[in-house]
Image (tube, rainbow, N blue to C red):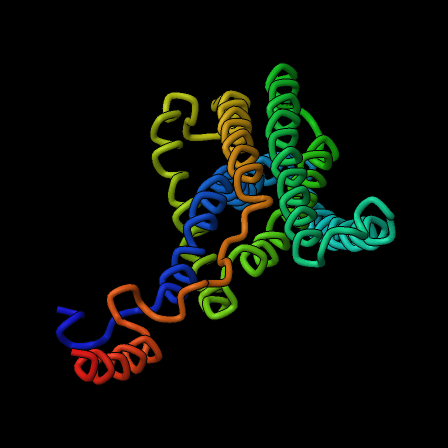
Length: 273
């Protein structure tokens, strides 16, 4: 039908759209990070609430979230310093700017996902200690996991936007925000089946629940997604997502110059005959 309408896409246009494929794989690999963000806004808050009900300190939750936000900016500043330092090294000067940015962004996100695994394991350890003490502890024990979740956000979320511009054709950059929101929203929705799977660990109150087991499961999932991200990072790190096309016309449409040459050749052939 498209051939009859004369609205065929150029090879270059098709390749530009297909440049979204690597981002689909890499964004799916960040689902573990989305699950951690959803946990931060639910179970982390519940932990703080149950502890502040004992200490009667309502400002602790604001302090912990402030620490998390500070770590986001600290992580972004660290990324800037590292990228500037690597740009000065002679070993990386031979690489073009796009390759440097791609490799640096993939490394940044990978390190952020590693922080997500560490955050889940630390949260599991702290919750196990809290339950062993009969639920009596202070919010200071939650500082490490809020520091790590803030570090994870700074490394991963800031890197996803940069990664989109590294792997996707420039003509598709306008879809970055929508694409990111759809994928991250889908990742957060995965919290529902994960919570249903671990429903036997989650009771009416935090003190009667086993969030340590849930955090351990979350850490395992983040580790699995980290392996997937590492695989696709290696696969697409040095692959040109949208190479220059040698064909300027669709294969089924003859070149106008070729048609002119054929038309000029026909009278000569007839004269010879």
